[in-house]
Image (cartoon, rainbow, N blue to C red):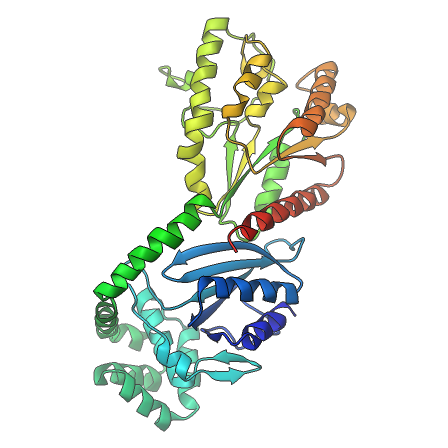
Length: 443
């Protein structure tokens, strides 16, 4: 049980923490994310505790992201996660968002926390207050939230009502009593305007000048450097001759759901700052995302080839920072279906009448993907999958791509003459290892 071992480390560490919600079936099962309030701990303290918890649970710290004001999220994973596996530890010092900054400071909740199966949860009145404020800000109150409030209230109605009256204005308590008495989601909507006004008032009260200055300092010195210097996303490239299975593997990666990434973005060859030059002609046909007949037309002349090559160089270089880096900030896994390194093998495909050494000459300018996967199988296997090229050309490309795996930085040779599920598992394992190594620099 992963969570049992993780929570034991949190408790034994002496961290002043409390699970926010969804704890009813913990630690025997867990939601995809575990929301945790904490106080009195630095970022490094949290890093150290999470690393120790991961070791104790035989997991890896796959990712760390600074999400907001002293708000850190960690993704943990086995060495090879199952498809769509996710275990997210979400450490928050408060509840805050852009529209409603610092609307809930959990000091009293942490003062009154109680023990449950060896870890800490909110007391009944604090769970009611927390649920009301959180659901008000999200404007999302369901039967599950109603059941949470009802269950907490029934523990000791008189005592809980006394605490609520001490903590909340009378009209808010009356609204809560209506929700409990009527056992109705509609009652929440009936009182929503005054709930919302109360949360706004709390946000305004907590959002002091000192707090705002503290947040600006935190954003400038912690969150932005962490996010921009070591972005949470990652880019990879898939290289292979036609028939290597790039598209099939890309779709399988999307379905696998590699944890910690907020989706998969496909890029065909270039970052996409520019369309193909032919698309700027009047009445141009829709741009293809593949080339079904790679050697079906003669290359352009030398001058036209050189102009196109130099324009696309701008896309590969400047376009990377405009089109790819922002996706990495958003935790995307960007997958290039082919990349600049394709030029090293087959200039004819791109209709260039240029010497083969030219792309290598400019290669130092090209941003390197975190991993370049060279997909390899015997020429016979590749040719039988797609007969878009001659067998001799397919064999030449297979040899060139395989040789490239020995010289290209960050290259990984992947055998694709086997079931797709096995191929994807190997690719995911390499991605996880790389992501873990990058995350270690954040901890």
